[in-house]
Length: 75
Image (cartoon, rainbow, N blue to C red; front, side, top):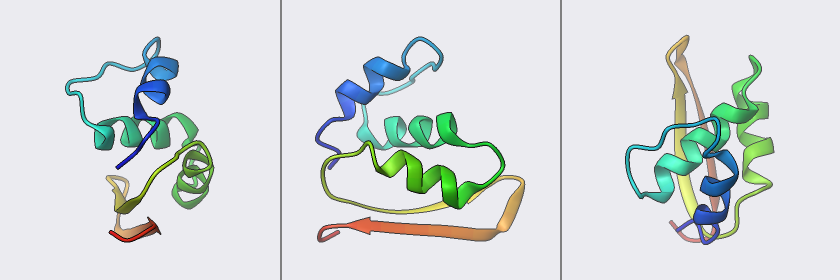
């Protein structure tokens, strides 16, 4: 559960179109906002802005054989 997803969504809303009210969609947009070619770095940077517990695995369409996983808390 991303506790501050509404705050993050508000900051991203000018440049991103959201299709749902889920914290997971906000997290994807946050990662995208930090992506400059290095998926791991984008995730690391994005997660510094997140409060809460989460477990995720991210795959980029351009690199389908690479998965980046991250976890905070008990998921």
